[in-house]
Image (cartoon, rainbow, N blue to C red; front, side, top):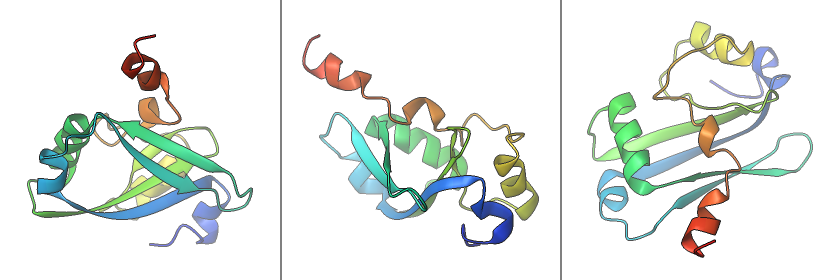
Length: 123
């Protein structure tokens, strides 16, 4: 599935694809992982900022405990962020129409959320 398909492109402002090693996430010493998503039309960037333990927990529930994880993140024009790898066409359409519901796949709380920087800096 391509985000430049006409049925998706008008509602998706950014997207990205990552190949992640489960062990790298599990053993990560980082406080947060940051995924950078370049915008399609406006050339802006969005960021998903998430703790590695939360990332792994969600990806395990979505994809199972596989050694290598393929992950797609989409950001809609309505400022929602979804993990879309493996979704059916109808579910992807529901995302673009802002009707999709799945708390494990909803990464919106981590979208451009830099409050963790204040926590790390003790502010």
